[in-house]
Amino acid sequence: MKQYYTITNPATYDAAHVRAHYTFDGSHYMNAGEYIEVLCKTACGVSAKKDGSTPYNVGSDIEEYQASVKSSAATLVNWKLAETLEKSLDVYFKNTASKNFWYGSIENNVLIIYKMTAATFRKFLEKFSFINERGCVRVREETKMMKKWLNMNV
Image (tube, rainbow, N blue to C red; front, side, top):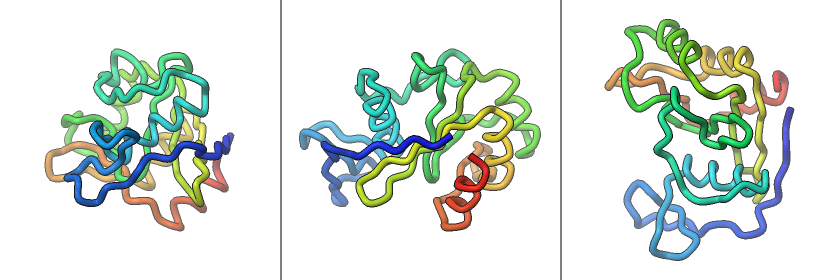
């Protein structure tokens, strides 16, 4: 399922600010993933405070929907789960507290939320993620091929 949300109060993008480029007030900054999470919360009518610190096996990014929110170049978990991508995904899906998996993307000031089941999200990760140098699972940068897959499968 896809949900579209027109961004009525977009954050300011500050390229000079290191790593966290998005701000609503000029003093508190978010990285791209945190910004997508705030937008998803706003779209669902949930308190839109920045909170990227919930461990995947304890809670969800959006507790009210038991939803894990990811976006382009996201890290699935900030530590190594296993030696291979397949085994890492086995560990992740065995232990995750989330029941719903959302991928957020922005096009022309519109947030598109791709809402997936665990099975679909796993297929997405098998196709569009990798193990980085620290052993963490990372979603690849968003591409036209990725968006085509999402539009065909979600």
